[in-house]
Length: 245
Image (cartoon, rainbow, N blue to C red; front, top):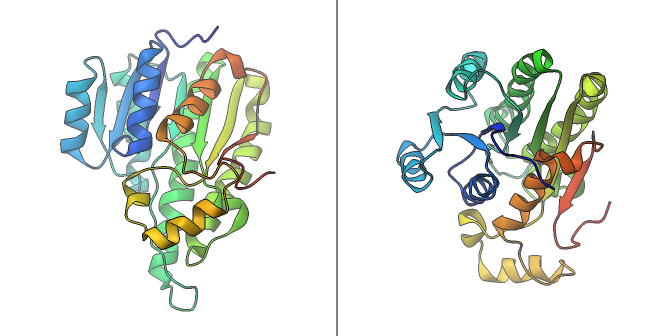
C-alpha cells in the first residue's frame, strides 16, 4: 500500500507538463506539496486547481539562494521535508564547436550544481528525522548522448553519478536517493519538434509512441512511497524501450 498521506514533498520545475502530472498524482495520494518554479502565473493557476498546494517562486540557477529556498520551503510545509523531487532544468542546445562557454556553464550550473545544492540542504533537514527520499529527474540522453546536447547530456549524466554517491553516503540514515530517466515525453517541448524528426524519434522507440507525463508521474509516485524503501542509488528508465540499461 502506498503511504504518502501527510508526507511533505518539494517539487521544482512544477509548471511544465511533467511537473503538473507529478502534482496531480501526489495530490491524489494525500501528500502535502510545495510547488516551485519561475512562472508565477502558472504557479498561481496550479494553486487554484489544487487547493492545498503551496507555491514558491524560485529560480534554481540562483545557487546562492538555494539554502534560503529550502528553509522557506521547509517552513511552509510545517518544519520538515519527507521528499524532494528535482525536476527543474534547462537546455541551451548547440553543436559542440559552436557552443559558447556560457551555454556550457549555464546548463551545467543550473542542472547539475543546483541539483547538488538542493539535495545537500535538503539532506541536512532529513538527517534530523533520519529518513527521507530524493528523486532526481534526469534524461535518456544522459545514457545515449544526443546531437547538439553535449552540455545537457553531461549535466544529466552527472546527476546520475552524483545520486549514486549521495545514496551511499546516507543509506544508513534511511535516506534514499534515486533517479528517473524519461525518454521522449509528450510535453510543450516535444510538441515543437518538427514532425519528420518526431517520426524518426518514434521509429527508435519499441513502443512506437511518445510517453505521457503521467508515465513519469507514476514512477515518481512509486519512488516517493514506502513501496520503494529498499531501492537506493538506482535509475528508473521511463522510455518505452528506447534505451535498455
